[in-house]
Image (cartoon, rainbow, N blue to C red; front, side, top):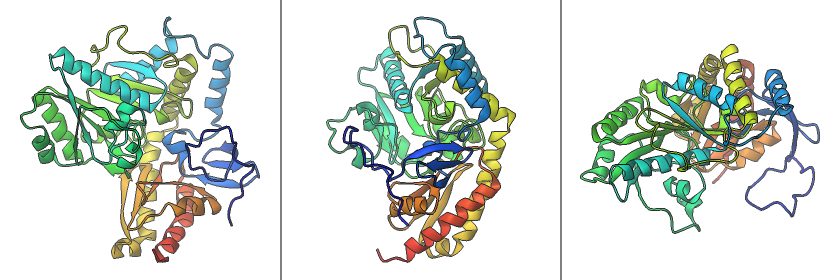
Length: 404
């Protein structure tokens, strides 16, 4: 059965998204309903945004309370909630200072500016930043240039210069690409690439990069926009490697759906920006900050880091069992990821699965053409994980049997 659109697409909305013919009206926990009353299990979580699921009673009450007080003031004034959320992030990251903005793109843009100013402050006229194949850091001109996807870059040249691109998980290729180059100032990576196909950086590799940055006086900048905020079972995915970056952009799950971005900096980067160097009109507004503070409080009270690790491991194992034959044959190349950030890579394009899954009552995404991405809310239960497997795996098996 194909889901019928609730109404024709608006002629007034710019055509920038390939939307499904579904209009959602409300949600509860990990489930949402469309305007026609149809129920879906949400395994996409707003693309790793809805940390606490939908309509979490404590978050809703906190936001309702905040709306009656202040939504926005501006950064001309002290914002106590901003200072509180910064403290919570510093304590959980081991870093020192935070800048707030409104999106992951803005956070990554700020990180790039930090790296360039770091270089200029050292007398480097044309700073260069190491970035990665298959990376995704945003769609502004600078973050698009740092992104490693020619398809999303097409039509927007000339791109920004100053980037050196390397493959993931090869310290030797990183060293070779930067050998005898005095202009390198930073390495910028995702601990787990999201849009690029749920590609984790190996723990040994992260430790090697940290050591190389220390040796050469570079900034290590780890984009945790999608994989951070408890999604892997630790607050930040790089913490599994026992390292600490100098710069860490955050967004998505930080405020459970209220737009927010943040750049967390360690001692090496915390004082690079001075007043006037950077800013954000909406960044750090009281509503977004209240959402962030409450998200962290609720995550800790409900043990959601442990839940992400436990339920994520259960989901991954269940997927591996259900798709064992396809893994053995190579029709499914790999099931990878950590916690509740998982990717199922097929040996053929599988974008058709997005609509087929929706028709079956499951919301997912496909990224990098052939990778099913699962990034549900961190409140996902074992029973809901089993339901994801029960719906999704037969759809994958049917697709794989079809002729290319």
